[in-house]
Image (cartoon, rainbow, N blue to C red; front, side, top):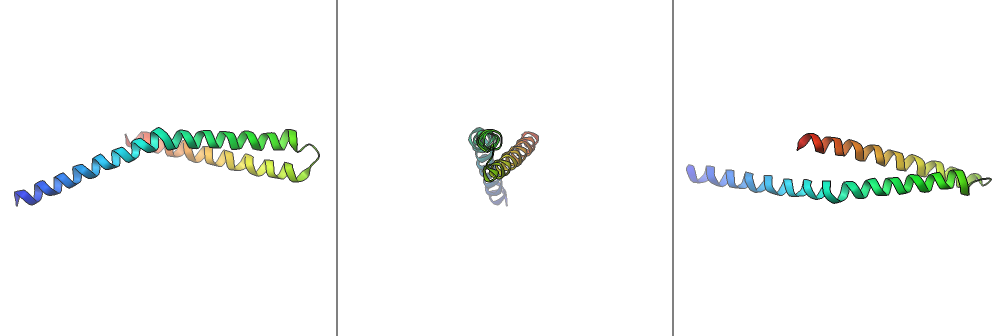
Length: 88
């Protein structure tokens, strides 16, 4: 009936508004936060690898791992941003 269709459309509209709000929060707050964190981790790994780990092999290895983590998170965030830009 007409009433059931209108209720279904209302539910669909509410779901659309909810998902657009969720995507807005992700693109406004979470993505920039992940960019910042990945950059800080990358810089800290670079510092450990180049400066602090001069002769300490353990610090150099920790720096390599942090460099890798920072780079991987950065690439993942760029891919997520690319996907979200295609959805809008």
